[in-house]
Amino acid sequence: MSDYVAKLKWSLGDGTLQAGGYNVNHRMRFAGGLEATMTSAPDYGGDARYVNPEEAIAASLSSCHMMTFLALCAKAGWQVTSYEDSAVARLGKTKDGRTCVSSISLHPVMTFVAGHEKTTSELEEMHEQAHRYCFVANALSCEMKVVL
Picture 1 (tube, rainbow, N blue to C red):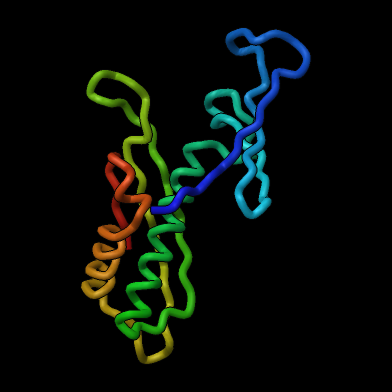
Picture 2: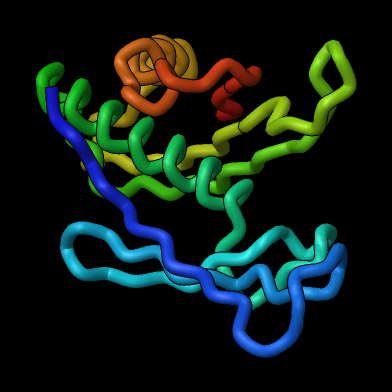
């Protein structure tokens, strides 16, 4: 199997490390050279201008699901012309009270070549297959659903 690497870099800078008194912004560098500033969610003191882990996990699922969906559509001869999604990660609690990403919902909207549109039933089945084969979905234990 393959390895995929993301490198994280953070430094304290000026000041001391104390609860609620340090900067949580950090840089992530990906294999292709792309870098992103990440932080905690704004509800937890992060900067809304940057990506937080909860958004990143929703984005990862959305991206992987879409690529799996498109691969399955290509195999089936479905001519998709566009795909958009709004992925929503929701925080909740585990049975023992720890905070977690408890659910992620995807809200995809696809368009097809004119005259080749698919029924809701056909789309539901294809999204179910995409979910089953999505690498990221297979790594997560939270509730995941596709809302058409």
